[in-house]
Image 1 (spheres, helix red, strand yellow):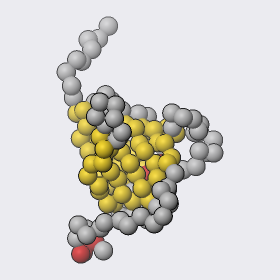
Image 2 (cartoon, rainbow, N blue to C red):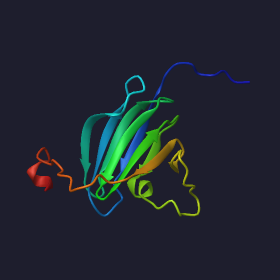
Image 3 (cartoon, rainbow, N blue to C red):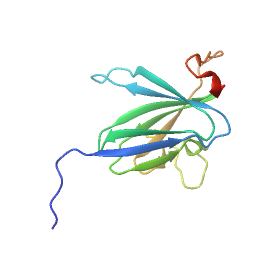
Length: 134
């Protein structure tokens, strides 16, 4: 029997925008069971990646938006993981997924809950995006 590691360690989570359009990702913070609070927003163009260093086994939440589609990601991983954002938006009717209240499993440790797009047009603030990227 091998010993179990009880020391927290870090893992790498890499999101890649494999969709044909830009997406935004937003960190969601939950405080004492309250509703999710909005955190920083990251804008990813087609083909761009975002790498995050997380504590293994800790729960994280992210909102992914590509109007009119939206999803809330629940992440709890134990090893380095890659996530294609195209997989996040795949339909639940795919043969290897199951549409439940718990969400759709995107990859080991990551589930996505599709969200209804909010009514009315949403203005996306991209003023912080450098001129060379527009």
